[in-house]
Image (cartoon, rainbow, N blue to C red; front, side, top):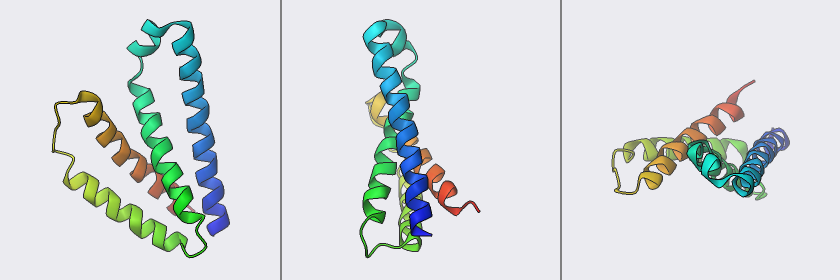
Amino acid sequence: MKRKALKLIAKKIMEAEQRMQEFKEELDQNPAHALEWSKTQFKRAAELQIFKQAKEALEKPSTTVSQLLKHIDTEIHQRAKYISGISTSQTGNLMKVFALEACQSLYETLTEE
């Protein structure tokens, strides 16, 4: 189970990194256009952060998939509880929302059979 979970997380990380690399290349080629459509990249950055944290946690020998799922569930509830704490930073607000979505996505990925 742990090996399968690590494999799924690694795949998600690889996909997010690839999309971020594509954005970097587009940013180099046409910055104005890339930034017009950059909202999606905030989502990718949040996914990358959450997935890497999960991978790091699960790579510890003492961490089980059950413990990780419990932690993610707690994170989802905590993040949802404080999501309404709107900041004056629009990008900060986007990252809060997308980090919550990334937690939910990771939880769903790890609980699918």
